[in-house]
Length: 216
Image 1 (cartoon, rainbow, N blue to C red):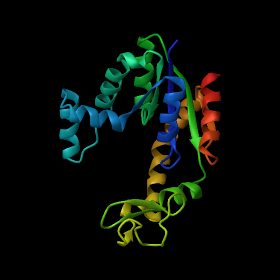
Image 2 (cartoon, rainbow, N blue to C red):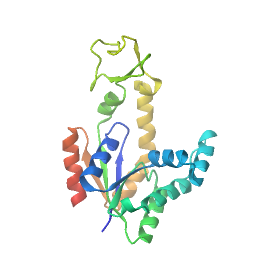
Image 3 (spheres, rainbow, N blue to C red):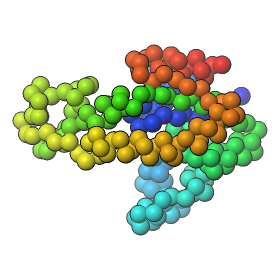
Image 4 (tube, helix red, strand yellow):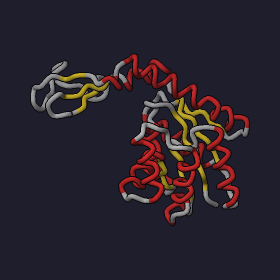
């Protein structure tokens, strides 16, 4: 029976990294809405053209369009064993649509792992990026620092921090994420499908916990 996993986690929780690892370990297809949008826009599909026109106007892509893209993607052959949904659903409306879509296929969401990382750790992870003004090479104060602080190893140019990477911006991103995602977390918790995963541990330890959750 196909397994349908909804993977939740705030920015900086390592959700994308874990989704890629789980895909290799389990054979489940990884579906990210960001990737779907880029694919449809690049291929100029009907859905992609509509999404691009909305984004060009600065408007949000509506739920029904996102749902249509996900439904088409799940119908492909590589999703026969199941999928890991990353970035979808984003709200209870999309979650209800997902439920109806999977019910029509004789299935349902199997489990919803929620990778939890303390806010101070998330801020440290997300606000540590510095970029070279010349080459665009990216460093991180925790994971890949330059040999000399503030200077690019490759060309000696100055490193700067993008607005998106400042502590203030990161805090705002995290606050918005929680405001938008809290209803979805409650939605799946009430169904008994939410499983909290400790994300402030080594990557392989998080993977081990996620694999154990998927096997239950």
